[in-house]
Image (cartoon, chains in turn red, brown):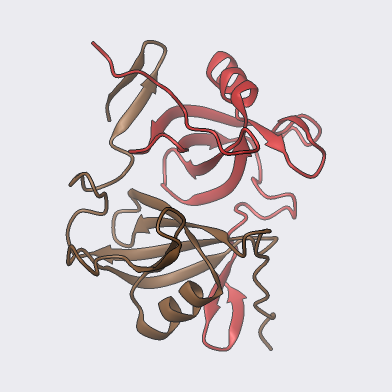
Length: 113
Length: 113
């Protein structure tokens, strides 16, 4: 019998979702999901998030075509975070970078990762 | 010249920190950092977080000995999330699991990852 999935949403009804590349393990992006985004991601296999700036459901790639095709969803110990492994169709970052994490923090500041 | 590091903290003075294994890329944990946790992590090379439940600075491994030795810190596009690559001294999860993400979400519920 499987454990129950009972996601622990915060006061805004959200949890954190981390996305890594399903084949390389590379960091891609971090965003937020509400219950609807979780349900749509599970149903469709494409990552959906909740846009806090637009306050609306956000199918990643809806306008850019850069969908994230989810191959696996991991759940953390206290069920307040999901980890998506995904195959990206194009850059994951809105800047056009493959990953949102394209800079490294050094003692001097930021440099290209 | 390096870009400026200007972390964007939320209303509670926090940002999300994701940790993966520096060698394998495996998911380890997700937690939160405030400005002090960020500074201590950079100074010491050991991951520090802000414990929201205890409302205090938290040196990961302080009581368990399971420190996270940080090899690299990546910063995302809008500087509201840090990605730590780390070599863990022992399990990263308080449950004793190597990773907090030890379960996979299936259509039926949760199963061991």
